[in-house]
Length: 549
Image (tube, rainbow, N blue to C red; front, side):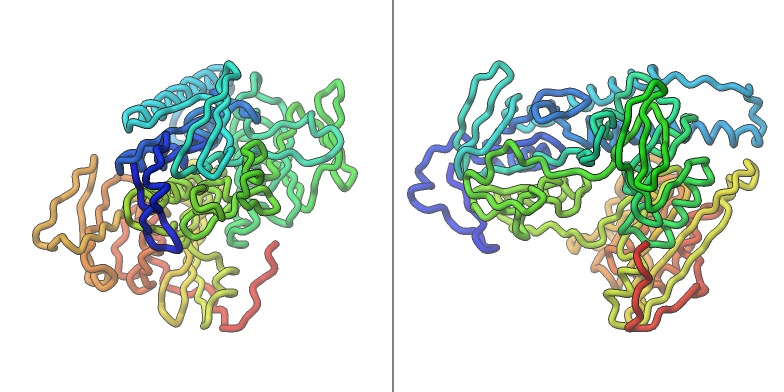
């Protein structure tokens, strides 16, 4: 099957020799995680003959263990979020007493029951992903794949037999793996893989790291009643996020009872009768049942044979790609964490979609990594989209205005919980555009991401709108201010939760005036985003941003 290929951003016809070569597959994908499955399915939908391989399933990964669905489904986002829900109930039960719920002093928590239900769910999802591939006509091979030529792959099956296939295009989508620090006793620690499948709930935990995973697991375990010590190298956790929001997260972690150890790392782990003794670089001794290393992930490329066939890798082992996710070998492509661009599941899905459009859809499409909303599922969570205050100051040509609102959520007024929500908008004064938005508080990811959907379709005439049917939608509304941004817009508010679709607004270039002209949902926390009228501070052009703590 002759296929067009992208050359320097243009689709070109295959040469005569390639056009007559009978490839086994139009596309072979190594790695059946979120990005690999999306690319395989969408390419097959365009008519491509697609094969994909993945390591055998197990909740804890290794160089020879994986599973269809990948990190997010099996040992990442999904099981992590299940544990976050579980831990959130701990605080909710405490708060419920002031709402009139008569609860006993002691409420039992069954870790093994949760673990069983979590495993049932990821096994179910693993099966769903397999069916998605099958239904799309994608041929799945279980085993370890590697590249043996620019258009040839080898799959070692579970029984040791090796299969070789020719493919017009090869896509690398093998993701990343958790790393351990090189310190004495590092084998006594665990990574997030093991943390999601512990046989027993720890009685004490030490977490090393200041990123998403560290903060989330500290919140999870503390929410389940486990004393937690969180050690991180900077003054505040979550380097790269807005400093003001980072400080809010730190306050909330401390308020929930987590012991913070800023500017602290671990130098050694020692096995003792009481568990594991963690020695900090300040000489402090912390004893725990579990020491979690949340110190980063590395691209999963070691066993792929890529360098042997000429594929360029960077110093971290990530696959180097161009704007279209193509490597220096024209027939080999890569998406997702293995490229170390923006390591988020929805980004891998976007990159995979763009790949399929580019290679098999006849529509060269570059992934857009600008204004990607992110969330940290701490308790309470943090979410943001666009620029932090520090980034805005660095990038702006003119003055920057910052609007903030800190308040005690309505729910906390009765429960008595002393935990404030913080919201923030960063505005470019020259254009009045909102270039960044952040929130730390209950439902932050839902408020930033969802609720208001902006649908742009120049073929739709406004007086002939087909109303999209969503469960529990409230209404739709089109404002004059938004009309100026897009030819045709339908804004749907379809959920009873506190959503105003901040990510969509920032992505579309909404101005502060348009935020101010929007009517809020009352009473809700989200309405604060459209009622912040007073400037908290204005930063003059040319100012230096604060040091990233």
